[in-house]
Length: 80
Image (cartoon, rainbow, N blue to C red):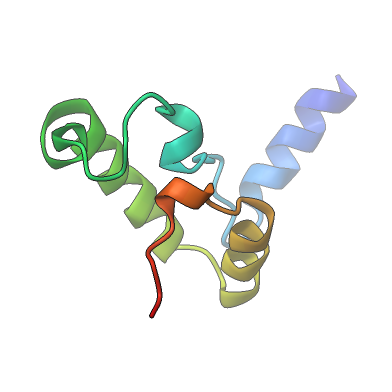
């Protein structure tokens, strides 16, 4: 019962979003960042939902998310 009460209270909090999206490299690790998978179908759909979800995060929450989920080396752009 306590868990159900906590869920009700949590859902009533302003700005609460029950959704959570993992970064694309964790959900689909078999696909390289430049793969066509991300341009159509399942990959593209996942990115659209992920980006919309990220837009709803506060600046602080987004910074915490990005600090926790650091992309692997092959997902980072070469900065020259």
